[in-house]
Length: 460
Image 1 (tube, rainbow, N blue to C red):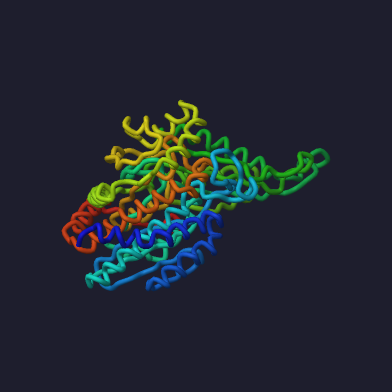
Image 2 (cartoon, rainbow, N blue to C red):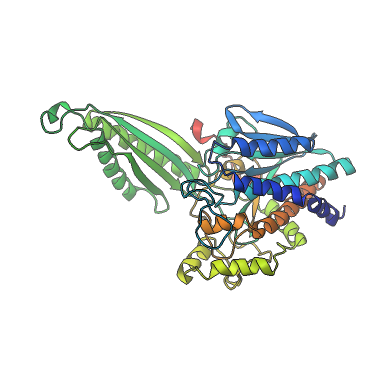
């Protein structure tokens, strides 16, 4: 098939995809609260002839499926927003609602919609050419809290996939080949005995003392882990009034490391420190794993295939108005801060002079590790996985900022959305029709795992 015909099918659906992206942008919802957002996508995909499958215990995640038999190819999408990121489409800070309301500062209004556009287009081709195979779109909740995909992975929804692809908004058009930090998020709650701190301190058992002793122990633990391990925390309940021995206190920890087993081992040691703090203070301790995710295994075979389709698509078609809008943001960026963002994404030198990236950039980050975390890592330990990025905001702007939010609702974001849907759709077509590429991806995946079996962080 001529890929341009496939891309034309994406173009035909452009207005519907932009409408969906803006609907999500105008109605941002936080992690695990995306009832409207997930329903919007479910209803649309059902209208387009997809079978919708709900996921047990995950009311804002779902699977949309078309076709039958193998290969089974997945596309992941997200639609949760970030707290306190409300923003209008303008180049100065101005919340669309209030400063405390959410906003799509990570571009998830585009992320999920790009996948929807791709699977809808490929469905039409599968029908026209009577292609064998199954295409799935995974509506994934709660990526921002890093709990969404690990929770649905427990339900086995990715287990029978032959491959999976995705994308993420950025300021570059490239393959995201780097790994990310595996992570655990835990809250430790200590229960003590209240007492008047002056009149009868001997009767009390301070939960706050337990938190502080745990934090001291964690500081010493940092001396005995690898340099790449990160342990950071915040005291979320400090006990209340100083003249009452605190009966309750709580501390929230993140443990990050380049590999899942390092996170798992460090977490076990941190729990022992919490147990020791409870023993020293004669308090009771409970902990809860809020989220956990794996590092990312980027499949080179799939990444190369995505890249070929990105080149064929040709990058976002930005116009003079988009460049003018971009310059309004670029003028506000401090050079050092801009360069820091470029460095954090391993951006090549050719990107630095750009205002908007309209080119497709060759991958430069395989073998490197990004400082953040993402729950697509869990998918990458279950099936061959690759993801691309697309320029949804000007070069040097960081995600999770009002600036990125102001762009994901603009024509810059909409043009990136179209580019993404075409690139993903072209890759889906290749995976459905070229068995040898899929087998090569599977062979690489088996070598990369080297016998490691995926276990959901919630079941470790």
